[in-house]
Length: 177
Image (cartoon, rainbow, N blue to C red; front, side, top):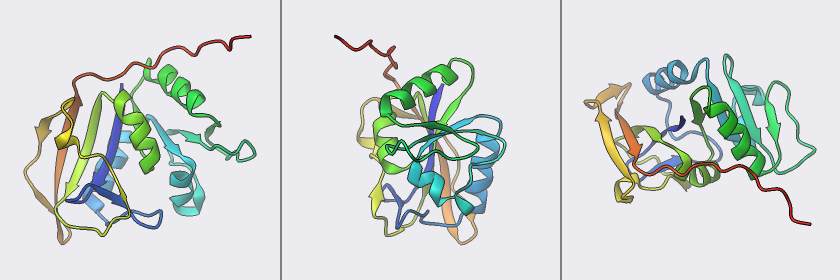
């Protein structure tokens, strides 16, 4: 299954200056426990935003970089969106694959996601980049919702959205000659 996992503020904001909007220990614990032992897929800037630009431990990391000279150690490097899709498709046949950002990757992968695990932050984070408002998309419905909880000084809520019509990743076509 392909699953997007993220947190967003009350305006669906997800980031500013290639960084997270909030430091949320409970949300980070949820992310770590949910994705550990699985595959995570991301764009190059997301990888570079991690401490030391190193991949997440105890996970297979798929990284899309349009620059074919950018090959990172300890990750599965892909250099086209088509190869990214095919790598995700092949792994999703055996295990859950988590889409972890950034904004462009989320936007492009959202139609393929069967679920979105969203931590809704009840605050405005002054974001520069945003996630699509799932509440306005007819294919997405909330199937699970926690009670609001405090994560430090910030109220958050864990939501699961189901995609009623996830798009299938098709086999790549051979180039026509």
